[in-house]
Image (cartoon, rainbow, N blue to C red; front, side):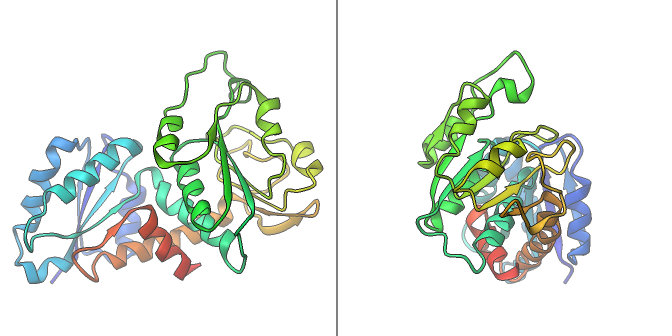
Length: 288
C-alpha cells in the first residue's frame, strides 16, 4: 500500500522544501494544501483517513507546516481532535522548521556532554529559541532567553515579542532587554550561547564573546549574511575559535536534514505517533 502524506501548510503556497524532503524520505503520494485554517482541518484529515481500514492507517500520515508557528500548533490540535476510535494517523509539526532545527542543534550540543548545571543564554525568543530553551532545560541547564532589542534589529520601532508570553506559559526564564548593552550583559556567567535572532541580523559581536571568560560554546541559527555571531562561519562544526567551540547554521543544517527525513519515515511505522518538539528531539538524539 502506498505511503500517503497529507501536507497541511498555513502559507498560501505549501512549502516546496517540506514537499521535496518528503519525497526524498520515501513518501509515495504527497497531498499538499495551502492556506489551511484550523476550521478546515477536520474535513481534510477525515477525508483522507476514511479511505483506508484502521489496520492500514500506518500507511498514511499528516504533516503540519508553514511559516506561522502559532497557527501550526492550532492545526496540530485540530488534527488530533479529528481522530476517534481506531481512526488516527501519525502526525508531525515542524512549522518554519522550528522543531527539527532546535532539536538537532541541542542534540548536537548534548552529545557526549553533560549539560547539567551549565548556564545557557539564548538571544531571541522566537519559536526556535524557545524550543531550544525548553530542550536545554530538560538536559539540566539553567536557561535564560532574551529579546533582541531595537538597536540590534536596526529599527526605531519596537513591539513586545509575543514570544515573551509563550516563554512565561512554558516556564522559561525570559528577559525583555532595552538595548544591546543590556542584552550583552545577560551573557555574564553563561557557558552556552545560542544566537536565535532574525535572519541577516548580527546579534553578537566578536569582541563580546571572545572576551567573555565563561562562554565555552556558541551556536548560530542564522545562515544569512551577516551571520548572527560575528567571527563564526556558517559551516563551523564545533570548530575552536578564540578558545571556544562554535557551531554554524550550515553545520546544523546538514544534520537537520537527516533528522527531518528520519522523522518522516517514522510517521509510517505506526499510526499513533505525534512528533512535536519532544518527539523530534528523541529522534534527533538517535540520529546525530
